[in-house]
Length: 239
Image 1 (cartoon, one colour):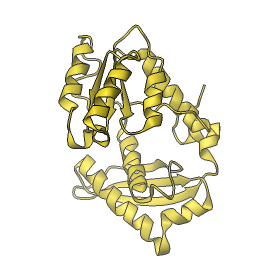
Image 2 (cartoon, one colour):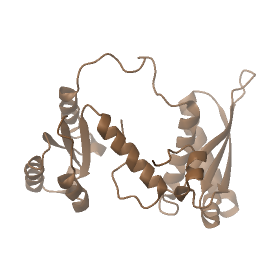
Image 3 (cartoon, helix red, strand yellow):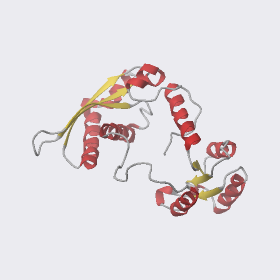
Image 4 (cartoon, rainbow, N blue to C red):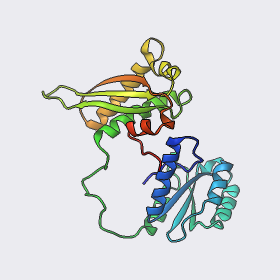
């Protein structure tokens, strides 16, 4: 399971994300904690993390190319002394260290029967992935302007009734403020068209068929801080 990152929550959505991560920690057979080798705050958190003592725990120092080999060795020695079973350095963007990390994980996982049917690729419905692809595209194009204020819901998803016709998808991009809506739409609608074009291609790759994507942008004020809005958008409400 890939959980949200551990953070100090500043609003309800982040509180729900933290609770998801903590729940995964309590139920995991093996823990893999990823820290950034060149980022002091991340390394400090890895030193202070109170890992459960009743299961294996691996520390991955990613972006290891941001420090020297001597610094990398010193970090691994120091952090291994902080309670991790093993420390593995990786540069994930280049695939360096990934095979070693995979081997360390597999060595510690218990053998069991499959937890899900072997033919299942995911436990989430298609609508979830469609919404995530639209949201991902908005992040890629507008990461600096609207960080984390974007949520996407699929309002309609219809399979074609005739051969050769596209799947119809109507999706809404929700933001928190009118100024963010203007950014998403862009001058003369240029940005929303670009988001739609890129998202449609991704969805077509996912589904393996043509897609007609109808995108809208709506303001849902302060949705990250309101329980009702979180529930409406499909997020877990914090306990």
